[in-house]
Image (cartoon, rainbow, N blue to C red):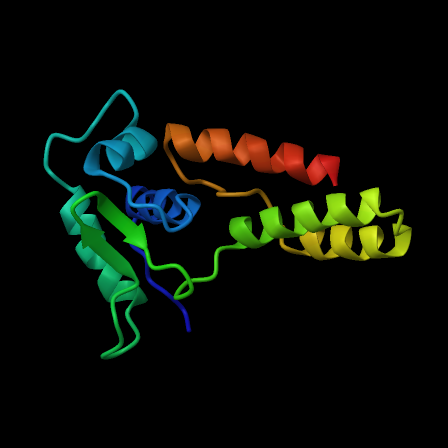
Length: 143
């Protein structure tokens, strides 16, 4: 289904949560990752989280974004994150290469490269998106 994730800053909040790999992220981490040195005047993080929960929720199903004492997080297993899958494949590529299995290495590299669809995090603002975009482009080149 087509998801309506709102404007770019709201999408960037989701990206920061996704890149957090299920780890709770506090309000300050989200603000730093999306706004950097220019945080918003209003307390927009809870508003964005509310909107993202609505967009990601499938009917009466559980929320895929949890809030706890240590912050917000994407519930592991409820959302597939390509970056997490990419890192798993890169680890497997290294194992296959060290084991001297060139065909398996090529197969795994191909699967990893297939996860890329254009520029990573294209158009998303914020220092974390910028750093991660660069890291992922370098990862793609290395594959």
